[in-house]
Image (cartoon, rainbow, N blue to C red; front, side):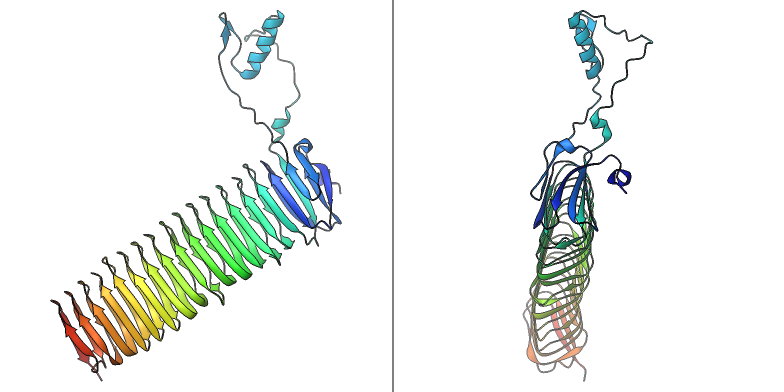
Length: 438
């Protein structure tokens, strides 16, 4: 079946050998479709052949259609009406200069028919048919307002700089090299499963982004700006970094890796993610909206920095070491902690801190917030509590073999359980109470 039957209005504009090492697109403003089929070469089609150049693996748009607008004006010369539209103006002007009578607006004679301008054929369209077994790289720069769809990609590198306001739809990508996508427009973006060596994706529009799954053999980096939503499936990477900004919502699946994981939240974006596992897990939050995560498992160290007034909720943390600095007026819930070495600084603001079941060897809490601290159960070898401010501290059950508690503020400090071998000091207006329960 010929292409004209399958794709009405498109004309063949060039061919590229199927052995080409790479395909490069430069699109100024067009609707682009790339799809694979059983064929030997890369075939290129467009509805305006004069707007495109195809050579040496490069597909480049050299011109764009001019969109005619029906501008209504009133122009008079020596009180003579030259028309109420641009087209009518030029017709009347030519007739006036040539001495021919102008066509009366009241004339019932229909105007002569003229061929339909090419700009009435619709936007520029580009279709690229790629061999199903093509293994080269793809490098694209797309601007304008047209949509782009790509059914899939297998090969080496995949690089796309997308600045079009039309929607972007990319099927599954499986490559050995680098995947890099920069999107800086108000387009909805849908990506299938992405499998590559290193993966970097940056989105800065105000519309939605959806990614099925990420699998990076090396490093994965995700940047999010703007007010749109971002949703991903599970993320597997050797190491990964997440820079989450803007006022939209971000929902990430499980993050799984062996290397370092860095998560940064800024502005007023709400972040929800499932379980996180890696080497060092570093979470840096400074927005006024919420952050929610499942269980964090760190092979080396877990760090949590919280500023701003947003709530922080983590289901639990398992790691050799935990260091948490918690500030602002939002509440903090770290869940159950299975961490031998724990240091928590709870400072400033009216934020409440809640811990579930805590199992550790060394537990240190520096507490100077006006918010309260509640621990469901604390079992540790050594405990060190330094408390200031006005927020009460309540350890509801547990045990410690040694340690020290100090109250230098206006709070009430209460420990219930086997805490008889720790020293106590109260220099504030509050109280220190240890309820011994064997």
